[in-house]
Image 1 (spheres, rainbow, N blue to C red):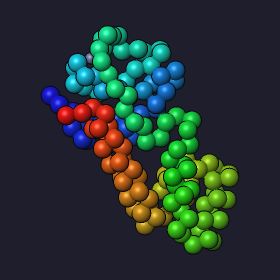
Image 2: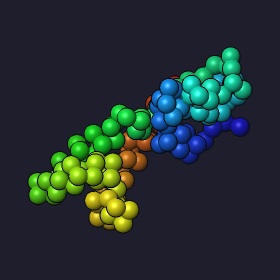
Image 3: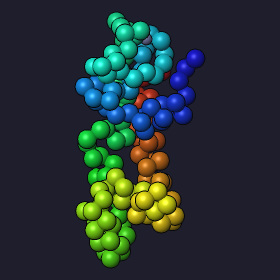
Length: 135
Ligand SMILES: [Zn+2]
């Protein structure tokens, strides 16, 4: 069964992108499936198979999503940006971009706006993955 966009987006969103750490998401050409492999758990069932590395929304330790967030909030009023920077200095950017209910800094409206950016980025990475996988 070919992989769906939904499956690919799920893998991209949760891809740690580190073989020597929590693992990396791959697409196996032979099995036409998505799997995770790491130094600790090398997924030997796909040994010798051809694979492509899937993109990662936020690779472990990269701060990639936080960087996109910091760029994104520049469209908000300076005062709000300062509040978020102060929050991030104390609790980190990973938490600052979360909804306030979950201990984050964002209101419902802000979260909605931010989620649209995240979804857009996931769609972009999905297209990239589709390109890598091919027809
Ligand atoms: Zn395989």
